[in-house]
Image (tube, rainbow, N blue to C red; front, side, top):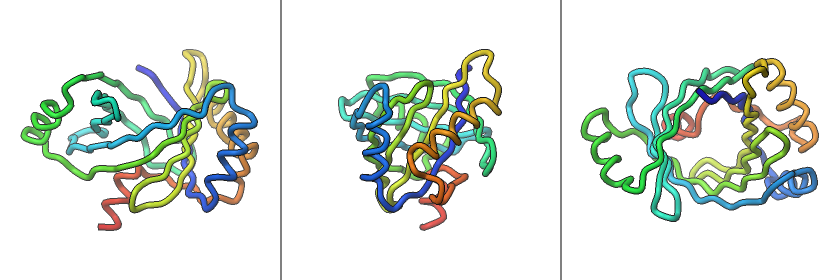
Length: 171
């Protein structure tokens, strides 16, 4: 099962962070327009991430809402028929909130840097360190914290919950 260490920040100047990311990135930028439809899961989280090309991924994951180490273990299933899958899941487990975002993706080493503009919430930076088989949580957290400093995020507010939780709290 793939594992990430994640840190998320609310930011005021995403353009500045994007400039910093571009200067150190191995790849990117790649612009992604995403619609994440969340479903009521008994354990963990379940979302259908829809892409501009009409495809989607069903992503099941477990992640703690912690200010320290946010380890995420996940599975993804790609589909070319998201409407049918969404209808089936909504009918059987119930549909929750939908998150709309424009994401700019950079890759820095083993880290995915997400610069997100989230509808109704604002601007965020999410760092996802992809752990190798022999990487510890602490190693991933060290990478994330060092990268956060390089991007200029030292004083940014850390966010410990998902965008879906922030949207639900605002409604």
